[in-house]
Length: 265
Image (cartoon, rainbow, N blue to C red; front, side, top):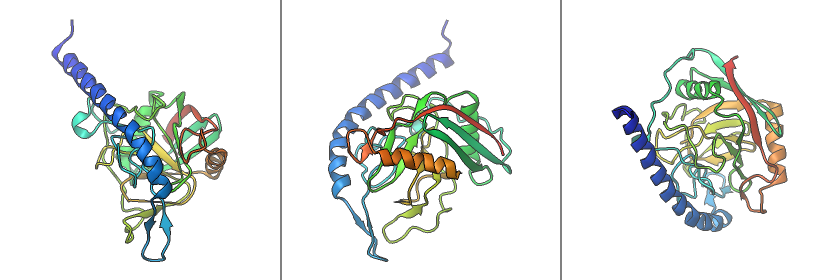
């Protein structure tokens, strides 16, 4: 017998699935546009006359956002706050402690140092998910090698459309300094940050590993730093390029997270 609470959750899931289907169709159209934009678009940095191409990076609905890590070419949705069907995990971590997220991958081990004092909600969410083996046997579905330089992981579906069913708030957004005239800050190589939908407080489970200094809007929670061995492993994946020879898509050298754990350092 299905009770009222179970029925509400079922309806919420069905609504979310319908929304994701509509978004997937929009992203297919946007992908064609983004390929053109990514190859041609450069934002001039007034102080220094440098320029950078912009591509989207995302854990959410971003059918046509070429200048931010919101939406990958394959998409990466997690529900917006109004669409979340599950509550954020109860806070159980020590907010004053440091934690380590260890990713055992098919391309080498990656150790990520996390400071719970700076990003308590993010660390707590990753700890809760890892304890449930959420990241085990998942793929890093997106690599970008033009404009922004990241490997995106954390989607249980492996296609950029998965999430945990809840969202967490943005944190630590001022850590990388004040945005420049172009509206961006530098996410240094080795940084690990949350993907999102392009809207505030819409992080889910997807995150990106920065393997080369990357200029992005300060909208993506920087919550960790890779160790040297992990950075080298991601650099090797990036060197092999993107499947199909584009600058944004599935990595040619496939990356599977065989096991993901989070423990107090």
